[in-house]
Image 1: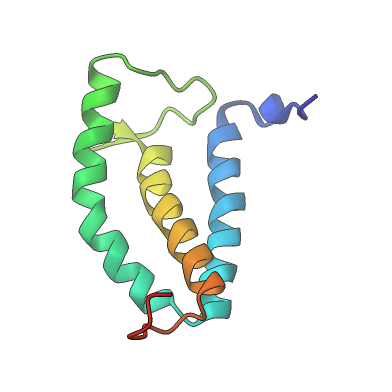
Image 2 (image 1 turned 90 degrees about the vertical axis):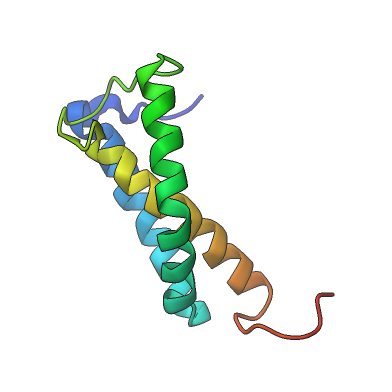
Length: 106
């Protein structure tokens, strides 16, 4: 059984983003990949924003446990999510593969 984190009420989604964002930041820091991750996030963000805005607009999903603060037509938590997810992916990748780009893809 999963723990009920709904106890944070309207801040539940925000709390999870801060938690996972902290994990992503720690991985990126450890791998020395903060700058590389920032470049990736900047490139992905506009695509993620349009995708997120559209799926919310057409009703693909609804976010219940959120602050209710919107920015540019989507919840503030979704903006954070669009930073945290690629940061976590890049952080894991850089941690697993030594953090530095190399000619060896193996």
